[in-house]
Image (tube, rainbow, N blue to C red; front, top):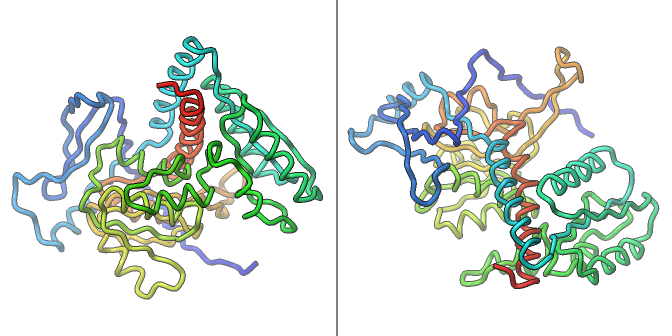
Length: 363
C-alpha cells in the first residue's frame, strides 16, 4: 500500500451544532448567521437553511471574507438518525398490532474481518432498537461462492425475511457481482441490484430500494430544508456504492450535477462552483477550504483514520473534507464522525420496513 501524506488542519475553532429539535431557522445576511424560530406544517422538527434576499448580495470577495467570521451550521446526522429510528419503531409496532407481521433483516457475513464484524453487530443492535427481527449467517473465509449463494437463496425463500444484506467486502476468491445479483430484488435493501440502479437512473421509473448511504445524504438535506432543485451539485467520487447513486439522486431532485473523480482535470475549480458538495473518496482532508464556494453545503461521507498520538487509540477519524477550513466557509457541514455514518444504518432500517410493507401490502 502506498504511503499517503495528509495535512492536519485542526484549529481551536469549532462550528456550532445546528440542533434540528429546537426548530431554528438559519440564514445568512452578508455573511452573518442569525437564528429565529421556524414553524413548518409538514415537518415540525424540520430546519431550513436559506440565503436572505432582503438585502443586495455582496461581492464574492466580501462574501468570502465575511464567511470566515462565522462558522458553519453542523448537520447533526446522529440526531436525525435517532428521530428516524423513533419513527420506524412506531411504524413497526403499528404493523405488528394490525397484521401480526414483524419486519426481518438478514445479514450474511463471510470471513473474520473485525471491521465487518463491527458493522454487522451495529446493524443487529439497530434492528433490536426499533423492533425489527435480525437474522445472521456467518461463514468462514474459505467458504465457497456456492455456499454463500445457498445462504442467499434460503433467505430469498424465507417469508420472515424482508431484507437481505451481504456484508462487503467479500473474500477475493468470490465473484461479488454474482452474489449481489442473486439477492431477490424485492429484498435488496442495500439497493445494489442492477435493476434497482437501472430504475434509479431512468426518468419515470422508481427503484424498489435506494442505496443506504446516498439515500441518507439526501435525507439529511431534506430534513434540514436545504433546497436542491436548481442548485449546482458536485459529487466527489464515482463508486457504485455512494458516488454514482448520489449523483443520480441529486439529478432526480433537479440539481445540475458534476462528478469529480481520479481523472478529472481541475477538480478544485469544478468543486468551487458547487452549492452542494457530497464527497465520498476516502482521502483524508483532500477537500480544502480553497475548494469551497462561500455558503456551500457539505455532506462528507468519508471516514478516514489518521495518526493521532494524543488519542488513546493512536488515531482519530476525519472526513474527506478539511473540517476546520471548510466550516469557516460553508453554510452547513456534516461532522465526522456523527454525520452520514448514523444515517446509513437508519436508511437500512427504513428500507427493511418499506420492504415488509410492500410485501404484505400494508400502508
